Amino acid sequence: MGIDIILKIAGIGILTAIVSMILKKSDRDDVATFATLAGLIVVIVLVIDMISGLFDTIKSLLSLY
Amino acid sequence: MIFKLISIALIGVVVVLLLKSTKPEFAVFATIVTGVVMVILLLSTLQDVILSFDKIVKKSGVDEGIFTAVLKIIGIGYLTEYSSSIANDAGCGSIASKLQFGGKLTIFAMSISIVSALIDVVTELVNMV
Image (cartoon, rainbow over all chains, first blue to last red; front, side, top):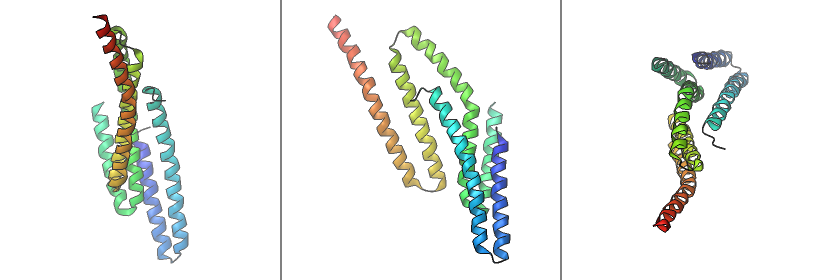
């Protein structure tokens, strides 16, 4: 928990960018959009999981609910 | 402790700028994750502060409900500010202002209970005279 997650997201972002660029060059645009979507979904799952953890801790800490 | 925070923030900024040029939609996620990591780092100190406040409130004999309401308001204020600043970063200021408006409303709704408790205490004092 720390910097590694930030760097992981950066890695996934750059990877999807490269993959979609390659796919676009070899004129397979539809596959490129799927690749970008896949990278996006992976990052979304990661971020949602972290945000729910954060909100749970804040809820329990500040007795919000 | 503060150096760790600064280093995480700087790395986050670099990652966000990097992602903004290649894939803008990932930049938003990078800001969210940097925010989450920094807050998780600060949660332990926040816990100590709240515990010490709790002791003070218990000693001062103030009604416990008021303190939890104040904590709730602090929590709501922080969460709305957190998400509205992320929305601002992502570029949509209108969503951020809606969020802040909603936060103000919920805080106002909560503070009504505190104000009424305060008024009860004051009327008690007045009747005693």
